[in-house]
Length: 70
Image 1 (cartoon, rainbow, N blue to C red):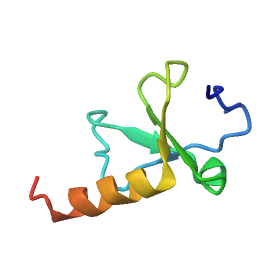
Image 2: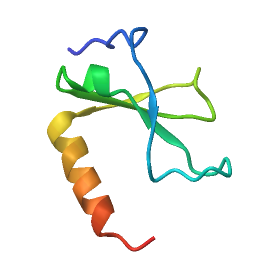
Image 3: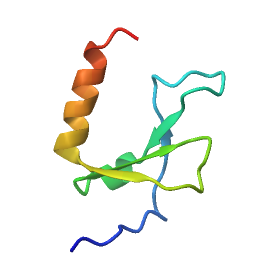
Protein backbone atom coordinates (compact mmCIF):
# COMPACT_ATOMS: atom_id res chain seq x y z
CA UNK A 1 0.00 0.00 0.00
CA UNK A 2 1.41 3.40 -0.93
CA UNK A 3 0.97 6.53 1.12
CA UNK A 4 0.36 10.04 -0.12
CA UNK A 5 3.59 12.04 -0.03
CA UNK A 6 3.80 15.28 1.92
CA UNK A 7 3.88 18.03 -0.71
CA UNK A 8 4.01 20.93 1.75
CA UNK A 9 7.74 21.56 1.06
CA UNK A 10 7.15 21.52 -2.72
CA UNK A 11 8.52 24.44 -4.69
CA UNK A 12 6.27 24.53 -7.74
CA UNK A 13 7.60 25.55 -11.15
CA UNK A 14 5.41 26.35 -14.15
CA UNK A 15 6.15 24.36 -17.28
CA UNK A 16 8.04 26.29 -19.93
CA UNK A 17 5.45 25.02 -22.40
CA UNK A 18 2.56 26.65 -20.53
CA UNK A 19 1.26 29.80 -22.16
CA UNK A 20 1.17 33.15 -20.41
CA UNK A 21 -2.48 33.74 -21.31
CA UNK A 22 -3.82 31.69 -18.40
CA UNK A 23 -4.57 28.66 -20.55
CA UNK A 24 -2.98 25.26 -20.12
CA UNK A 25 -0.78 25.76 -17.08
CA UNK A 26 1.04 22.78 -15.63
CA UNK A 27 3.36 22.98 -12.64
CA UNK A 28 5.73 20.41 -11.24
CA UNK A 29 7.93 20.29 -8.14
CA UNK A 30 11.54 19.53 -9.05
CA UNK A 31 12.70 19.56 -5.41
CA UNK A 32 10.31 16.66 -4.69
CA UNK A 33 11.18 14.97 -8.00
CA UNK A 34 14.67 14.27 -6.64
CA UNK A 35 13.02 11.61 -4.46
CA UNK A 36 11.96 9.65 -7.54
CA UNK A 37 8.39 11.00 -7.48
CA UNK A 38 7.24 13.82 -9.75
CA UNK A 39 4.22 15.77 -8.50
CA UNK A 40 2.26 17.64 -11.18
CA UNK A 41 -0.68 20.01 -10.70
CA UNK A 42 -2.87 22.53 -12.51
CA UNK A 43 -1.50 25.98 -11.67
CA UNK A 44 -4.98 27.45 -11.95
CA UNK A 45 -6.05 25.25 -9.00
CA UNK A 46 -3.04 25.23 -6.64
CA UNK A 47 -5.10 23.92 -3.73
CA UNK A 48 -6.48 21.10 -5.85
CA UNK A 49 -5.06 17.63 -6.19
CA UNK A 50 -1.64 16.81 -7.58
CA UNK A 51 -0.85 13.78 -9.67
CA UNK A 52 2.25 11.84 -8.60
CA UNK A 53 4.28 10.05 -11.27
CA UNK A 54 7.32 7.83 -10.97
CA UNK A 55 10.33 9.68 -12.38
CA UNK A 56 10.83 7.18 -15.24
CA UNK A 57 7.18 7.45 -16.31
CA UNK A 58 7.33 11.25 -16.21
CA UNK A 59 10.55 11.26 -18.25
CA UNK A 60 8.89 9.06 -20.88
CA UNK A 61 5.89 11.38 -21.03
CA UNK A 62 8.09 14.49 -21.42
CA UNK A 63 10.16 12.80 -24.14
CA UNK A 64 6.97 11.92 -26.04
CA UNK A 65 5.50 15.39 -25.57
CA UNK A 66 8.61 16.94 -27.09
CA UNK A 67 7.98 14.95 -30.28
CA UNK A 68 4.41 16.26 -30.66
CA UNK A 69 3.67 19.20 -32.90
CA UNK A 70 1.10 21.09 -30.87
